[in-house]
Length: 215
Image 1 (tube, rainbow, N blue to C red):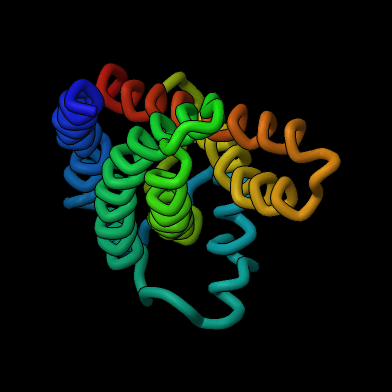
Image 2 (cartoon, rainbow, N blue to C red):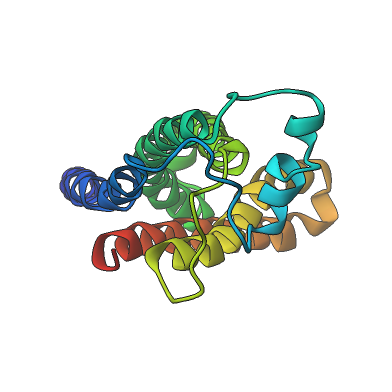
């Protein structure tokens, strides 16, 4: 257990650093927008989700939700993405613990480990699911950026990896719940649950690393 605590602390320190480095993406975007005139329009090549929500005929425009100007939108975007990054660090730290315990529970051969740690694993599952989905919602509903470049960037890598870890995070609780209900397919569903957890943890780790290395 001592070794795991050392690993957990190492994860936290590393991804705390990753977060601070990754903030440069948001900070650079903010400084690029400081002297933009308020008549700036919506960016070209908006992702489909952003266009659906924030486009000229987007839901938020029709419902008259959000700031009145693009400058205010960009300021709101910066705040939402900073919170999104903090929640990403918290989620990943929780997933490090949850994945380690979950793997041991999966390999448990009838020892007392299950009785001692199952409730902690389940509680951490609820916690990481909540922080992850909250952070994802902030990213999805944040106003569009000033522009969307076609070149490779950490943000493009982030969006690609997000598809993987979002799908895995959505699948995990449903697989575990159905495994408990369906005794005949318990082993298969729990195996899928473990694989989903593995995908979620490692793709989110790679995502945070990408934000650190690629600015």
